[in-house]
Length: 414
Ligand SMILES: Cc1ncc(COP(=O)(O)O)c(C=O)c1O
Image 1 (cartoon, protein in one colour):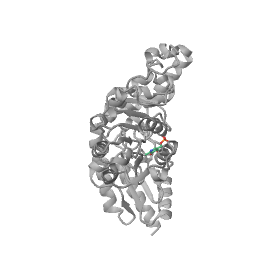
Image 2: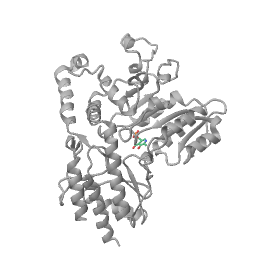
Image 3: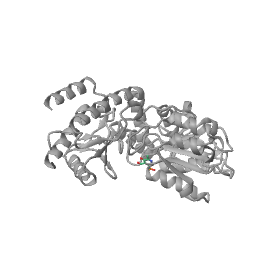
Image 4: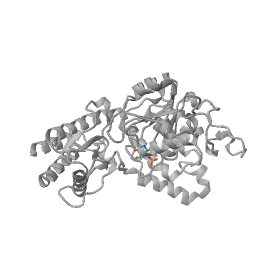
């Protein structure tokens, strides 16, 4: 392993990435000062610049009080607009198609209010077999909200294209994870979107594990709507503000039904305090409340980091890093771990989902051992360790530390 370590360090030195822009949690003793942080799929790291810029926004509040809405160096009234272009670039959207607001499940609900409109025989909602529970609760509750039986309305499938072919004229909505949270599989977003729309359904995507992980072209692919959180690969902090995409063909249409709030009203008349709602064209028209400036600050900073790094360049590095990680695991840990994520780079992002061969009990023991030894990964029931070398701040040596950690655990546990 010493040769592998030398190689990893040499390659890391040749390609240092953007690690210096982030605060990597320190390790608690041991040979390494920092953790091998492979949990960016769960909670991304803090960009160093966040603290300074957040303090600037706090200072503006302290100095200006209410005047900060217009007088702050970054005025609060149009603050969310600062995030619009970088958020749109990240997902391949037109600026007017993207808005930063609320949290992910809230946005999914708001968008389903507009785009899940069961009518006649067309009532079904298609989700993936291993949909994230919150998505499952959301679609089931939407079905119930329309007076439908969730058990008969929500179709779970591992073959979305086949399900669309089979049930096309009864499907109202297809709502899938762009990258599956459990397996790390990157779905065929353009293909499924085209098939769903050709069948007459609306197609929406939960991009929690895709945004900032893989390049997306939501506008070009004709996606109807999407939502994503920004605490994972977008590094905007725990519970950070989420985002939403509404394709311009819907954004232009003021007649699309929606739940309304004053921040979605046309800014030209917002402060005239009229009772009738006039939606702002574009995704902005789905906003309800005035945005939380202090919560937007970290996302603004982290989107700048992405802009500077370049998503396509990051993707190139990501493919190399995850391939390196995968090869190490296949060659050295196949007796302990089975990789559940597809092998092809175009069918995955940076995450590898690793089934622990010994089952749940062994898996929990391995997870605890790794975390105690400064190798930070996460767990999903029933037996999956998720580990994600993210190209912004991970290095080959982090992947190697994971492998050494698993081997050390395995040597103790037979
Ligand atoms: C795929 C997916 N969907 C939805 C959620 C729920 O997100 P939130 O709590 O921000 O609504 C998560 C959270 O991790 C997720 O991974």
